Length: 357
Image 1 (cartoon, rainbow, N blue to C red):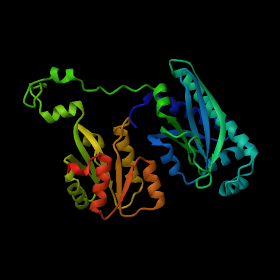
Image 2 (cartoon, rainbow, N blue to C red; image 1 turned 30 degrees about the vertical axis):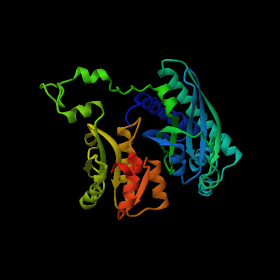
Image 3 (cartoon, one colour; image 1 turned 60 degrees about the vertical axis):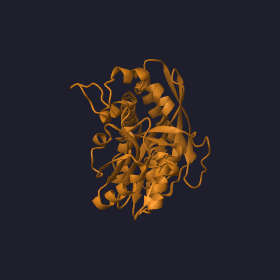
Image 4 (cartoon, rainbow, N blue to C red; image 1 turned 135 degrees about the vertical axis):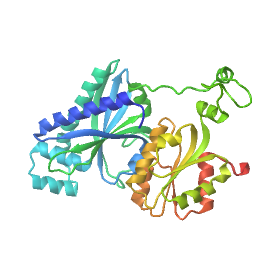
């Protein structure tokens, strides 16, 4: 995810410190390494969860008012708390397998979470220009398909930046720690530059008449001018299979938009250059991690306002659908294509009325 480099750096430093300090508390080597970041929403994030988790709110005060959230998997919490309590390894594995967590475990896990919050406070207070105070709130347990999601639980509805870290400990299979920060609070921690908006003065300043503007060599095409102030309205189609890619491009002709195409390995940044991307369609045989990684890259290109993504594949499972939504897809298509289905979805996401075709 482009942008938020200051926030990413603070979290990277704080989480590494938290891992080192928690490891000393546990008497074990523990590393917490920030590995990824992306934009998500509450419904997408929790819709993709398959295992239980603990959600810990962090209240941010002083000049940076708001709350963000630490999310540990339930099994990681069991392992960490059990080690702190001195429980024998065989019993730890049994508790982990059966997801057994007791009051003592929650108290011990809260101690480790306090270490994480302490490291966050140290780094944030030492980096941010104004005063900040981070206070850890009590953990909330959430089990998918058992505990209901409500407007405020286990955290409020909204859009978030998710920063994912790997948890690693010798001899243990660990998952990850996610930090979910509301976009508004992220912008307080790390203000982002406002994209320059085209103004009437821009056209006057560059006026050259007849669809040309002044450039380095005296002239510049009208299409390049469009790229400067927003780009050519386009749809991006990413698909390794050449025949299916061309079939999809043919179905998009009714939009009147330019179509930029490429394989799943194409340079996304280069493909997006000079384009106002209205929609991205990602095609594959199976919706696996490779295709999901492309979703992340697309969202990173337009971090503040990512284009809608439709993923198409022949084989869909419930888990694959949930993962696709979690990683930024807005909709799915099942191959072989149904032209009416494709047209309907494209109209909806590109906001094209049937009367305009």
